[in-house]
Image (cartoon, rainbow, N blue to C red):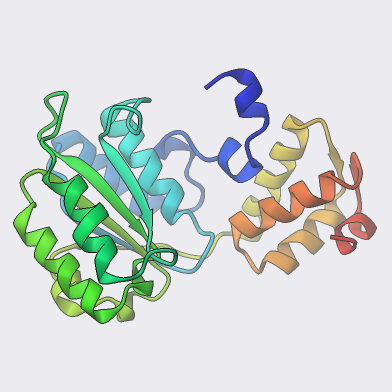
Length: 228
């Protein structure tokens, strides 16, 4: 991706952590995933926790650390958002098609990341469970869910479950300040407080509010944030 293309990315994508070392406030999860990377014995995984705490970022960072920077371009990783495609047809077509393909590059398996998996219908979840069983040698599955109790037990029992905790307010504000500095914007502490309150601890939402505020003014105070 060229520098010009990077500059046009939404800030949520532009500042997504590139490795597990950059994940914020999920020390226990990161430590466990580092151990998995060392052994290369990758299980199916379920990332559970509230929105915007790093589940998607962690899945991408894990895959990048495992497969390298071209983890997507080389076909080692596919992301599907179940809130957009929640029916059984998605499982039968997209998921099964990716899972059955022979892994390239000598890794032995690929990773399919199913975001917002708790949005899948019951029929789709049962179909997904069968795909997990059928293609476990060629594909590992990472599921992300805001509500893990909505995932059927036969899927949960096949996954290592990782619980993501809410982010610390000071760390969210620090990360937002870093983004603002990187984009040449000035943002005061009161504005950061308001953004955090509006986002309710959801980092993705907070970054989007910051970017929307920056489109109004290069100097962001609480009045600018309230205009978003």
